[in-house]
Length: 328
Image 1 (cartoon, helix red, strand yellow):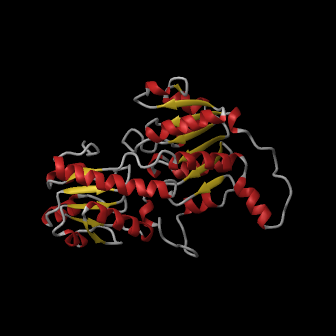
Image 2 (cartoon, rainbow, N blue to C red):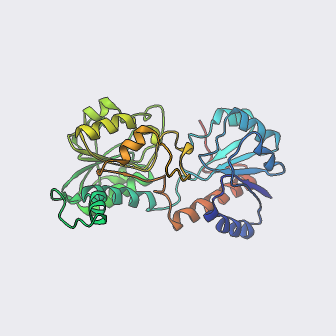
Image 3 (tube, one colour):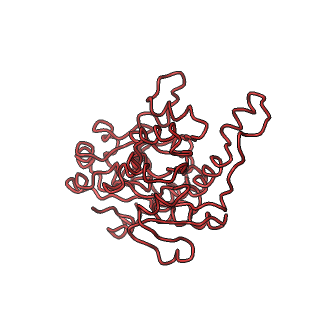
């Protein structure tokens, strides 16, 4: 069995190769993205594995089908880079990795929130400049706060439990409340989550309902000084509106690991180059923490992603079905 892997990072190669040997899979590896031209690498492969940088659109789906590919395995939870209608049109079946680590993204979200509460970025900058004075004001303690969790799937549920461990009051919004979170969160409407929360952590999928859910109007309905944490999808936020609210003092802080159209700059060294003015504006603020889509990036998570990817392939080949198959 042959599997063609696109977007292979150096840190993935050894782990992926070892799993392939264990499972009797022959690999064709490319560090580049899937395009109609590079789809020819997959000729002879039943499946391809890729990440969000490679899109399954009409052209790529047609090219993969022409190469004989039947299955598309995305090494990610999000799958907004896959046009399922185009995939189905060309006979491609797709699967994702809905769960790959119990803690990685949730720990990142709490780390970021705590760092903002403690003004870590400003403190480090001052200390680097040999200023060893106290910050301008005392920090807040997480255990005394009301924190909203927008989306309570696997990751959001874990974040909610960790927040409760700190003693915080946890509000949550989702179209599908989880009974098992009774006593952990208080489910409220989206409007109430925005109105009451002193900090909001976003863990929801990107849909037409959640696209730009944080916009100027939404921010206006939030508490003054609210802190936002986005470790989900960049397109959930209108970052220009967020920047304006940070500059005006309406928002108290931002931690962002994801951005719209991030594939144009993520995983690239752009030192000395001119950046998007919104991102440049955010980077200049002490109450903003920006990371390059690394919330998932732990050894446990990377191995989990690879393991589930191979499991998805095995299920497709052995049963013709896959529990993680994507469908509209």
